[in-house]
Length: 318
Image (cartoon, rainbow, N blue to C red; front, top):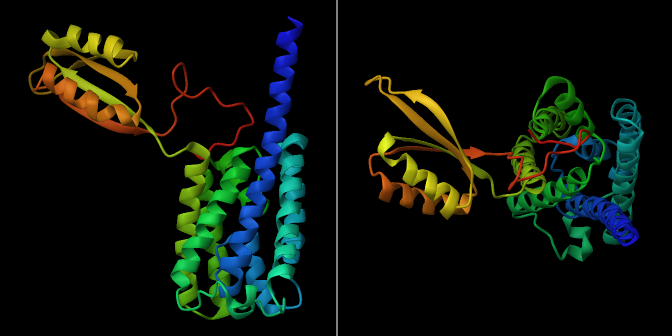
């Protein structure tokens, strides 16, 4: 018993350290995305740091990360009030770490921090002035991965992450959609200040890619599939054997009737992984070529054989 308790404590300690490591890693990746691919091209990908990019153009002596601190503090206090001390502590650390890393990277990477142009970034070694689309995509990937890692470990990087969490909590708006909504408003602010209609288009591309990557990092790339199989009673036993014995899944019979014929039928409902779909389709075709099959994406599947139910305070992107 003592050995089991010690092992359980070791696992919890490892998970705790791993969670914090992933938060710091996410903050670093996010900061790198802004310093190397967003800030020097005045791309405004929404959020506190997108707002900071715009404000830096108005007040070049104040760094983007410093504006991040100035905007994040009120939102962090709001986060602690709404989501509680435990969640707030992680958010405070992540939100204070990101702009600090951003400022350090800026001082180390630019010759003149008041003029964060591509030509002064690492002596122009990664100057993408002639390919801003590539800069937008690279920045979006780093931002999406960074924010995704932080959120997956039950924190936020502050800013519009907190606003998106509030929208999710009280208005049931999907987390990534909440970010998209708020960030779009920041882009409008950038249009007004920067007076360049091209940059907002790159900003929208960055926002879209980063929000998709947030979902990817949090939920994973491989969604499960819902299968609805409508077949006549002659093949029910064969399909049951296929599901239970061959693909090692469970299923549910749903009572149904044909709209045209009025005949009573049993529709089979089951969930399989994405890589099983083609095989299952082929096997169903062999058993009953006249079967009616519907395949639908399942973005979250909880229970035995799939994901464990999330904790009450867990962040969802749905």
